[in-house]
Image 1 (tube, one colour):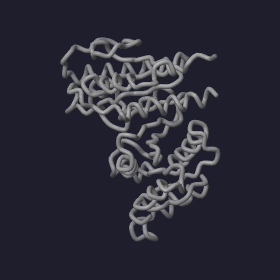
Image 2 (tube, one colour):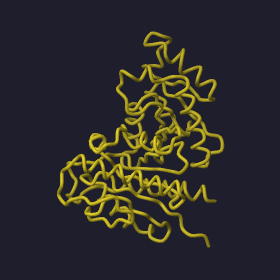
Image 3 (cartoon, helix red, strand yellow):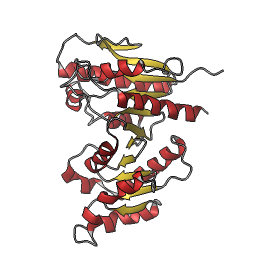
Length: 297
């Protein structure tokens, strides 16, 4: 009998709810024995760690230290995955401003993982009802039209198709492209980008669309598509969170190993109160384990 798969779990920002939801998730019935978990993070959070990256002073509010420890944990988890010591990573939430203050100039987990692994990535938010992939991630809305190039869209389509096939077991993925402008531009009245940029890419990459944002996600939830590529962060994130808040999982496509995370942030306002809901962290662990088991089969 083969050994159970190993998954690294980072504690995230120690000021937030990461340690709490990790501890609650690992206590979920049925997790013990089926997977070997390697907890990566600082000591002092109340959660036993297997891979220590330092010490968190109890009660500290030091954002820079929190960001540095969170960054060190991500780096160490990637090292474990790339060496084969673990087969996947689940990351608890980080604070992007703290990460920067701690010396890591990355907009978020996805960009940091891409830099550490040296491979193109795409951010997927997945739930039992909907899968959304972002063509652009953490950039200002005013910068989106310039960032949406044919190369970016084609790469996102390629990563989405490969991820659905290899990680989710969908042999022939049906992928829709969400339009950039209202009503997909309405024949140019509200912008030409959907006709001149998105439509040619959709044809070349075998995508359906572009379809208006106010209908394409509903169509996907009704089973017409396996995933929707969204042109910018908030149109995609809003759809998935309205559809499945608490059940959504962030999946980083394109990495040499699966990485998942909850669909929420650090929730600094409720940290330490013992009321954080671990549902999304549980879903992230279940999703990562399912992908790992599929790849091992």
